[in-house]
Length: 397
View 1 (cartoon, rainbow, N blue to C red):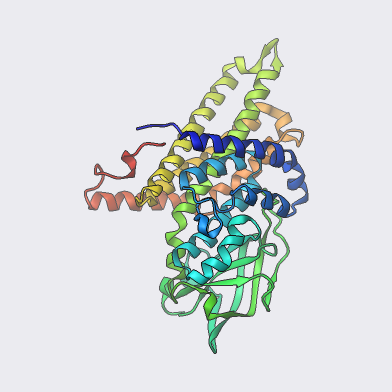
View 2 (view 1 turned 90 degrees about the horizontal axis):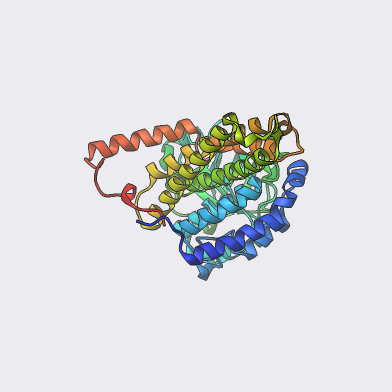
């Protein structure tokens, strides 16, 4: 068992960290204020291989593994959570589902621009009245000659109105539940495709989020992704990787808040002493550091296990649950240490608080993660696998 990163990954992390600190962090507050989509920065990230980390090199990606992905994503999140969200979205289901279910023609057409940062991919599942409940989805795909027509509205689409490719889940068999949903690839500029105004969110303003309206959007059958009726099941099967990514993002946000609070506690003086010398400050700092380290280890363990082909549903949900709750705890504690100063925009901690809050919501709420973990525990118990071999016995490289 080893807890060290390989030297090549440590070196790559140094490059990503230097880029994040020099090119992303200095502009994070401005992006938060303006709420504009950072296309130029995403192009730079793409040139570094950050937008197709696990996509094979033959399709324009970096060809690395999940262990590298979570390390890089943490670095970007520590600089700007909005950029980390955008990185996670386009690295996630659009490319993952293309790799797992796309035809060779689809992979060759769509993956190289997505992986290189020349294009951005968005995922469209949630609707104003439905999310993970496939039976409640109202967006329909109906046959139209040799193709399809898509009708409906998708909600909470990160990159809506900015993305170059939309992966849309639509109902093709209304009475089949989860087995009646199909995935489609919809390029930007398609007839009938339009977008709502950007949502006015608590945080992560540069990760622009809108509704996506589909008004009889024509889609060729060649742009159906995978088999008819298998879109929802395929998307859910890919959620483990997405949850590991949100865990890494949460660790990055928490780390940034912790470092700022620690430096502030070392500089700020009260009653003739640095405030870090008071237990009322030093004890929260100790707990913050401990929780961050535990969250990072859970995240890297889940990534390690995924890279080795283990089923990681439980481990991914554990990592996402603990890391997102840690981000909430740490950012709040950091604001408390700064006191009134932390409540102002003179310091980035208030932004960290706002940015961290959504990590307990997207890719499945904390409550959903507890449901998933509990179900997996019962499954392991019934199969007699509680003490058997599996990812829990692996180390973190």
